[in-house]
Image (cartoon, rainbow over all chains, first blue to last red; front, side, top):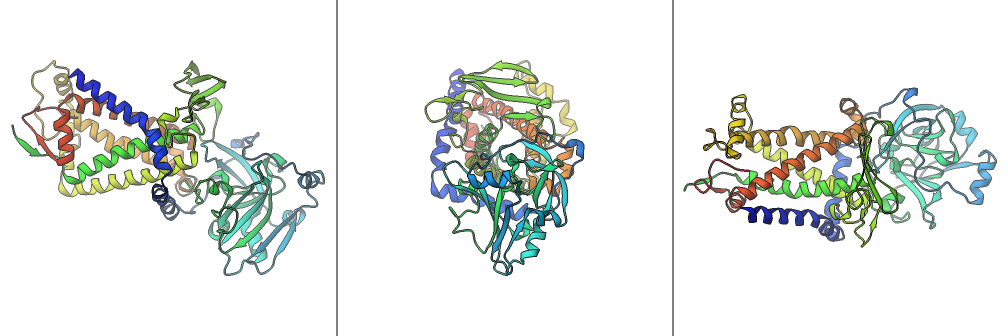
Amino acid sequence: MNRRIFLASTVSAAALAGCGPIGSALNENAAVKSALAAAEGLNHLVIGTRGMAREYRDRDVDRNFRVNGFSTPSDSGYMRLAAGNFAAYRLIVDGAVERRRAFGIDELRQMPQLTQITRHDCVEGWSAIGKWSGVRLAGVLDAVRPRADARYAVFHCMDNDGSGTPYYESLDLHQARHPQTLLAMRLNDAPLDPEHGAPVRLRVPTQLGYKSAKWIARIEMVGTFANIESGRGGYWEDQGYEWYAGI
Amino acid sequence: MRVIYRYAFLTRASHWVWAIAFAVLVSSGLQIFNASPNLDASDKSDPARRVLAIDAPADGVGTTTVFGRTFVTTGWLGWTDDGMGSRGPHAFSAWLTIPGYQDLADGRRWHLFFAWAATACWLAWLISAAIKGSLRELILRPSDLSKLWPMQAYYLKLRKEPPPHGTYNPLQKASYTAVLFVIAPLVVITGLALSPGIDAIANPLTVLLGGRQFARLWHFAGMLLLLGFFAIHTFQVATQGVVNQMRAMITGWYRVGERDGAGP
C-alpha cells in the first residue's frame, strides 16, 4: 500500500513537473499551433462585438491611469508636435476610401464629442477605469466614406518597440463602427498627455487593451492586412496574440 | 468476484479529456496569472483590496502576500525557475506553466482552446448521461446526507461495512456533484466574466461576481478547489485498487469482488 502511494505520488509529481517541458515542446509544433488557433475563430464567432461596455461614474475613475506599453515617442518629429501643442498634427485617413482626409486636432475637436467612463482590461490581467472624450471612429469613417472593398481600419502609430518595429493595430468595420469605439483626445477631463497617447489614441472598451492603440498618425482602410508588417493585423498579433481580443 | 460494466464510453472518454484539459488549463492558467500575479477583491485593479500578491521585491527574493501578511517564498513563488536554466522574477515556476517559459500569448491560446474542449466535453457528457438516466446514480440526494459520515467512518476504518448504496457511495456522489455541477460551472462562468466582450453582453454577471478582478479571484479559487478534488481523487485511486480502477476507466469493466464498497 505505501509503495503504491509512493508510486502514485511520484507519477503525479512527475506528470505535473512535466507540463512545462512537454508543453514547451508541443508549443513549437506547427500542427499543434494551428489546432490551438481554432479557438480564436470560435471566440470571435460566439462572443464577437455585441452589446455595450459598462459605463461607470466619475468617482470610479483612476486619477492616475496606469501607463503601459511602449515608451512615449521621443523622435524629433513627435517632440516638435508636442512642443507646439499638436497644432501641426494631422490625422491622415486614407486607403480604400472615396475621400482621403487629413484632420487637424481642432477639426477633430469641432466634430461631435463623446465622453465615456469605461474600464480598460489589459491582456496581462489588470483593469483600470478612465474617463475618455473624443470623436466616434464611426464619425471619422463617415467623413471619408470607405469604399466597398474596405474591410479593416489599420491604425499606424508613432511609437515603436525600441528596435524600430512600429506599433499598429486593426479593427474590422463592425468593431470600428461600434458606438463606443472612440478616437480619444482627452483623459480624465484633461487633454491626453504624451504618456497616454497624445494627441489621439484609440479606445475599444469591448476588447483587451492592446487594441486601444496610442499615438495614432494614420488610419488606413484596407481590404486585407496580410501585407502590413508580419501580416496579422497588429504589433502584438505579429507576436502571437489573437487578432480578436474580446476575451 | 463479479465483473460489472460500470463506466459508459462517453464517461470514460470525457474522464480522460478532462484529465488532459485540467492539466493544460491549470498550467496555462498559471502562465496567464504570472503576467499579473495579483488577485484583488474588486472590479478594477485595487491594491487596497489585494488578497494575494506574488512578488520579487529584490533580485533573488520571492515573496507571497496573503491578506496583507507577507511570507518569503524564494524558489517556490515569486523568484523561481524561468525555464531557461536560471531563476528570475516569475510568480509560478516555469516547470508548472505551459509553455515552460514566459509566453502569455501562447499560454492564452492553450488556455482558451482547452477551455472550449473541456466545456464541450462536459455538455456532451451531461446530455448523454441525462438521456440514459445515469445522472440519477451520480447526483447527491437529501437521503444521502445521513450516510456521508458512516461512509467517511468506513474510510477511516472506524466502521466495518460501508452504508448501503448504489453504483456510487454517498461521498463519491457528494464530490462528483460538487465538482461537476458547482465548481466546474463556477470556473467556466468566472472565466467568461474576464472577457471584455462577454462583459459587454452580460455585465450583470460580472457585477454579481463582485467585478472583473473579483471574478479573476473566484476563477483562481475554483482552480484550487479542483486541485483539491484532484489530489483526493488520485489518492483514492492509488489506495483502492489502482489497477482495477484504471482498467475500469479504460475498458469500462470493474471487478466488484476485488475491493468493494469504495472508489475514487
